[in-house]
Length: 170
Image (cartoon, rainbow, N blue to C red):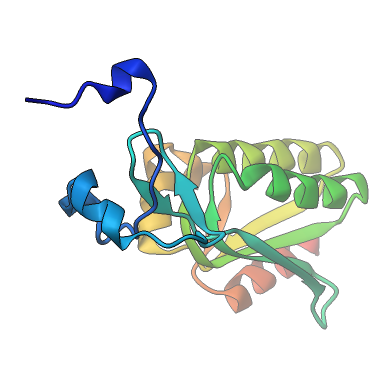
């Protein structure tokens, strides 16, 4: 007989790595749990957790004066506000050129795309230049599906993106 505990509000949240979670029933998976969940686990009401790679942003200025924001991890609904803060700080500073290094980004959802569009719109008001570099095939597919490859300057490498930003400055 199926369990109807979810109707009475007695469902428990559990954690499992993504590679294990989809294949195990909750009754078996319960035995694999630890008392202290890792910080990068997202708990779902279904009793299964998904591992989320936290987004990190590293900012620096290269030798040519181009400001670079190197991202890693996943840019999703939970992490796009952090990216928004970083990009808006550059927009408020009216950076003449900004390069976003996405070579270590494994995933980006629509909130991440919206954040990039918001920055581009602000940068265009003061004629700022914006380029993306190191976009993986997986991310490129997302950009192409949304037709954002026509809007953003997307380059395969940091060097090519820096050269493109420099040539547009002249």
